[in-house]
Image 1: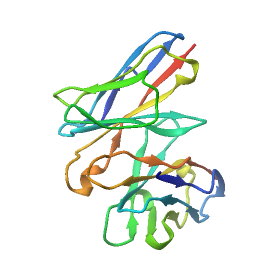
Image 2 (image 1 turned 90 degrees about the vertical axis):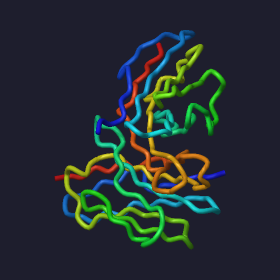
Image 3 (image 1 turned 120 degrees about the vertical axis):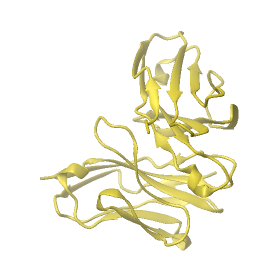
Length: 115
Length: 116
């Protein structure tokens, strides 16, 4: 069965610190990979996505992620976080087979950025 | 383009009742998926509808059902509500189709269901 692991459940950083959130998935086939963000009181928004091609993808608000196929990983990074990045971050995987859009989500990482 | 809309936004029911939640996808999107979000279980896939047909289902009891109409709007129904059904129910839509990029999903704000 497909699964997604996010290693950090809670992360506290000071503004300007660098961020890296881990995500590993288990699925043997071709995958689509996503990071979603949920700001307090708001709905899930797509940060970035990987379908194919360059394994280093850039998303909104200065976020990027690197797909490492050999490690089944898709870690999220940001060089310098801001207070406004305080939110919950979810990694998600869709095992692409053309037959479904089902997303498997990780448990989420709650990021608190201190001013 | 308008985003995914869900109604109602908040709902309070009592155990044993049933509830129907509605989702209107982004115009032109043909796939609608439903997810349940709880603090304990996180985000869990309920089911997906495409062209009025359910094409995938998660591990939820038969009390959870859904349907999709010809205009792609979708409803989900939960019968015989239990306390544990209290959750945020999210709807997501996508273009769907053969190309991978069509699988990008856009989420609505959710319906917060409280079961007393």
